[in-house]
Length: 114
Image 1 (cartoon, rainbow, N blue to C red):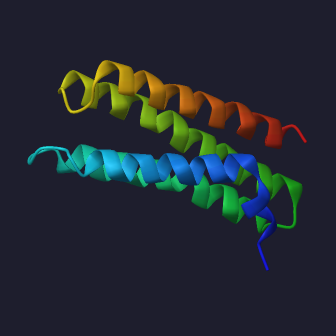
Image 2 (image 1 turned 90 degrees about the vertical axis):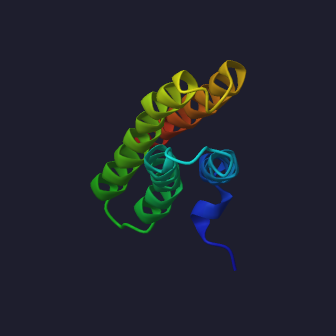
């Protein structure tokens, strides 16, 4: 039996995004652990907050967790920019990931407006 949130496109995209970030950060050079750790935590927080929000009974509680998920998505943007500047990721990969974040944020905004 699947949980309801597992059927949400935004949840699936958030899990895929976190998986992509996990794979990406494996290649980070020594001394960049702080960036890899923070980026992994922020990306994972998106899907976990979507799941936790869907477990809440009150609409206000759900919306709060979706806001936290969106904040975590926004948190990934400057971290990716720093990674790009440190040459840990290519410019085009940075843009791809930012587009994924943008799509996730739009979907989260839609959930909050339901």
